Amino acid sequence: MRNLILHGYWRSSAAYRVRIALNLKGVAYSQVNHDLRIGAQRAQAYRTLAPHGLVPALQHDETVLIESPAILEWIEERWPAPPLLPDGPDQRATVRAMAALIGCDIHPLNNLRVLNEIKARFQAEELQVRAWIHRWILDGFAALEALIGAHGGLYAFGDSPTLADCYLVPQLYSARRFDVDLKDYPHLIAAGEAAARLPAVVAAHPDHQPDADV
Ligand SMILES: N[C@@H](CCC(=O)N[C@@H](CS)C(=O)NCC(=O)O)C(=O)O
Image (cartoon, rainbow, N blue to C red; front, side, top):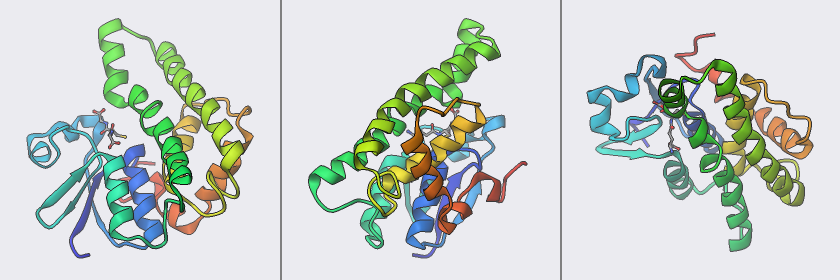
């Protein structure tokens, strides 16, 4: 597909998920990046594309897709090979559950606008904000550790990368960035690190993006 544009930001974990999926599929895309630190995601020009004022958005021709879960499912439908969902409805539901533990239960609570809101509304200090971040990562990771322990192989689900890994690698990156103690999650760490070593996933790492500020 020509003219595939990913609107993102190097450190956005939701954009990182989409980069991983596109790279695993071997799909070429260009990037337009929006600096979240200065609120570029809320600029009117970007909101005409993505009314929620968040990254990522994936644009092709006249179409703009938003919300990383919908974008990832679209990528999977548009380029079925290599598959990022296993065969069988039970297996697919398990992978989607792993994805939702991160995408629905951890990430939204620790998103930039939520952290900014608790700082502004409740005068939360840095240490309190960090405790808040840890709280939701630890909760979600405990459940994910159980699922990966039961269903994981080389990767989060079985021996091929799936959508679960597209979510896991960025969330693990974020957990490390915020110094979360990960000693209780050996299956999760092993799966996340195996996925992170895949060349397609290495290329999606925040530090390797054109707008990386390292
Ligand atoms: N549910 C959305 C969440 C998107 C999201 O929260 N993106 C973050 C970056 S990871 C963002 O744009 N944050 C900017 C802000 O909070 O103002 C998705 O999965 O695409």
